[in-house]
Length: 549
Image (cartoon, rainbow, N blue to C red; front, side):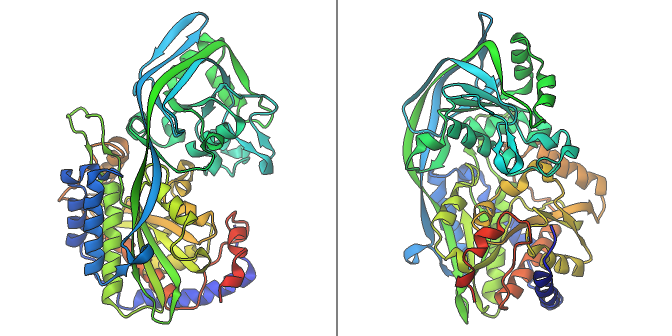
């Protein structure tokens, strides 16, 4: 994407003020305070910060007390610290699943070969000998002249789909923008499209590289209770069964049905692909569903602006994690979520302290600790659908998720780089630190659609999401790199994501200084960040242009 001439001119002027703000005295972010916030929030007593559990009130009490101590006001409706978020909670039990191929039954064990869940209200799911249809990536994208379903009716059937989109395996096709994942590659989209087509269930074939996480993440994330916002017509938006299977299970299933899984994966990269029925193969699955309605909470704090209090700068991070789950190899059942995302939550608290201690900004600063991110960005989706502060006059925002705990690095990665001129504003501050910007270090993972900025961005609010990237600047470099890599392999969404007193949070401090400086400059200006030409989020913002002055 390229900036238009008019936008480029505006940004050029704005960058001078941003760089100047960066060179001015910036607040001190204390690594000891950051570490202590994470230690408290990820302590076993917080039970993995599961939503709608007794632990949630402990989180609310801690965050509201810290925001108040920073000098901020309650920012929720009716002068409260919280915004109620009503969700449906679904717990599947007594799960029995199996393929039948050529008269032979192939049993599937929950958590091993398959992970089954639902987000459709009801007391039981019963799929008996449902036909199986492979629909490639499960995408219907008219603007890209792409339809994996063609004219095949999948109503009442169970569809088998690949994770990610076609360009991941063959980026030179450029049908979905190359290696960078589009929303069509996300598991959320695949379930949504299946519901629109009337499918009875979805089986996503898990492969670590295109999913960007291992099978343990699937098991830990989808074996427990699932949540969804309350929908007027849930049956039109949710399928009865949502599931994943291991790749080897899929390969064996296809072989038994006389099909070549790898060959069909290649065929699925073409616009000419047509759905393939797994002849002689069916799926049967039954499970009980305990469906209840629960209320969880976004925690919101506000520093009113001195001269333009109706214009808002957002800082966001999710406070929730997975809660308590099945024991790991060491018998640990608490998914503490220290890095993900007690670090981002701690970052918001210290940003609030910095703004609260400084001169009152012209525009309002609002901090939102979102709930239910781990359940599908539901807290931010709820806020974006029911904003406490109008989105039209929300200037822009900064989302933080899983911050750097490994030391100082050479670069600052921006997920979704190229979407808005916040990129250039951030770049000016990053360069003043002696670092450089890295445009989306891993676009194939679909990170732009996996954190709480996305529900706001798709409604037109310029949001940025980034953090430490690149090489480490301090020895021992190899040890730091190994630890960072090991987190993604063995700790992400697992019970081993725990606080360590040995963390080096200096890189986190530099990242907080970046988003503080850019946010402070915006809060004391009349600038309105812009989406770049070609961004899919620009039209939604343009529709409210008359509400900004």
